Image (cartoon, rainbow, N blue to C red; front, side, top):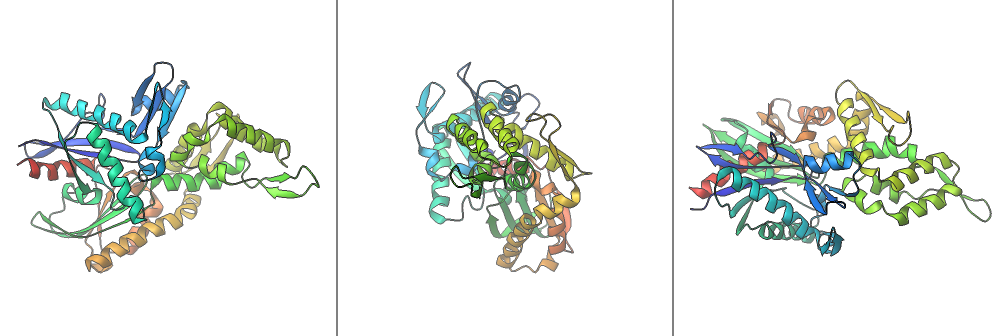
Amino acid sequence: MARWLGVDFGTSNTSAAILHGGRPRLIELEPGRVSVPTAIFLDFSSKRMLFGTEAVEALVAGREGRFLRAIKRVLGTPLMREPRQLLNRRMTLVELVGEVLARLRAQAEAETGERLTHVLAGRPVIFHAEPERDAQAAVDLAESYRLAGFEEVEWLTEPEAAARACGVRDGLGIVVDIGGGTSDFTVFEARDGALRVLANEGVRVGGTDADRTLSLAHAMPLLGLGTRLRAEIGGALSEVPVAPYHDLATWERIGFLQTPEMAREVAKMRRVAERPDKLGRLHAVLESGLGFDLAFAVEAGKIAANGEGGRIDLHLIESGLGAPLSPDRLAKDLGPLAETIAQGARRAAERAGVAPEAMTHVVHVGGSSLLAPVRRALADLFPQAQPVETAAFTAVAEGLAIAAGERSA
């Protein structure tokens, strides 16, 4: 029978694995890396598509091109099937993702020495809250896998995959998988290592939402959010439009915002702004293509605040520019997001018929599962549960490999 490849194409990171000798074996997608950023850079100079660490490095180096991240959040929307000029040809984002997955498949085949035409793909419990858009997202991604050369495509929810890899042998557990775009939950019962799934649940919030919240609260005011504009006639005041700031704080929208047209609009607003210095910073970001650099700075500030604290460093925009971010402020800003995640976990437990006090294990998966406000909210919800740590970025791929192995048997 054909060997199945397990693929976790995530909002923020991507990994893949096969079952080898009864154990999951992660594919080295880059030298020394089994998990890579889900990032694409279209290099205008070489006319090449770069993926993963190479894409991020091209952005940081200031090479001329177009950077895309969090593309998974666009699945199911009209943007996925809108033809556009990408490098030297017109194509859709469905086709672009297909090329990324074809590269991943080729890497897996080179490492295993086998032709891999069957894929068990991870998916969130929900891509979108709206059923039609959720269904379309699965159609979009399935088509990308087929364009990559996979003849058979099957799905397994990401938290259920992680449950298979978490190592819990006995008890009632809940997997809390907080990805870049979604938070997913699987409640399971384990007896002597045998696992039975009791319920799945999901909410459309994740790590990129945390980044947006922090960006809007701390970075965007430095670029003019909340600033007022004077009317050209009469001198009445109105607040600057908020839509560009929300787009600039949202990973998947940044690439669509950084256009000459938007830079010209901001230049016009700057002339009538109460704080032209702040609108000047926004103009500099758009004109110099620094939107993703700003987003990375916010993400770095979030990580620092999750420890001892630090600041969002925006010196690339203006020397000395930045905003302090302490653990207490992080807890305050991300409290509503943590509560939304806890509510999703509560619904999963209710659907499974498991009282929160009866839960024996909370399995943490995904980079944003490390956020202190989220950890506290889950510990309060499941007071008797033992936290179970996993390989945050590869647990889903490992579980997919285990499940895929059953199909290969």
